[in-house]
Length: 312
Image (cartoon, rainbow, N blue to C red; front, side):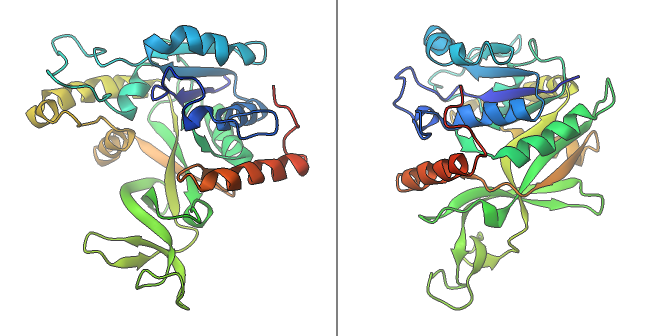
């Protein structure tokens, strides 16, 4: 069974073109999302599903979905604040979405096959899709509890214009994920935080404000996950626990994140998550100054023949 690509796009607004997810970066106005879908098709994915806001549906179908529909089967699902289990209501004053794993949960009625979850505004590169596509397509029919995550090498995910946030991963001897620790300040720097010292290395700032060096090949999460449909069942159950916790209902910014769910399944020994290595070099527009570099890198890939001049 061919895997499905599931794009998290509920953060898109209705002002088409006003957000970085929809910024024209390719030579013919292509967005980063266009390259992800093109790469997924090359990697053997059989369907594309987006989770979006319901009030964006008509515009999304007209301006975005229409260019893919004759290339690959496409479906939509919707994330809303009121998409809650029976017996729960939106807390008064809450406006923030419920988080990435809530967005994933919205796909339960349209995804019945192994699937890969990605952000729509990250350039993951072809090899990452080949790696996760191969893993998912080779799972035995009906497989459960055998998930995967593409572990990008941290040295391939940095910005030249400031720090980045990444989930630094630890693995066991079999290459299965044991923990993901979010580090909000990662960059290539000296131990004192300067860019001029002789001891330049990839470092993250720890809780005490110290810069801790890590190897360039340390795997990090870029939110590229591989799941099977049983993941929806676990997410439904745990979301009820999440909502039953009073602190999550009184904190109007509490979110149900994918790593929260994944860490629970690992700690409970319910599932394993294979960390898949990739040579892909991530890039995106973390800072405004990253935009031109991203345009240049895409153009270079086009010039090298990795992508056609016009994708769709």
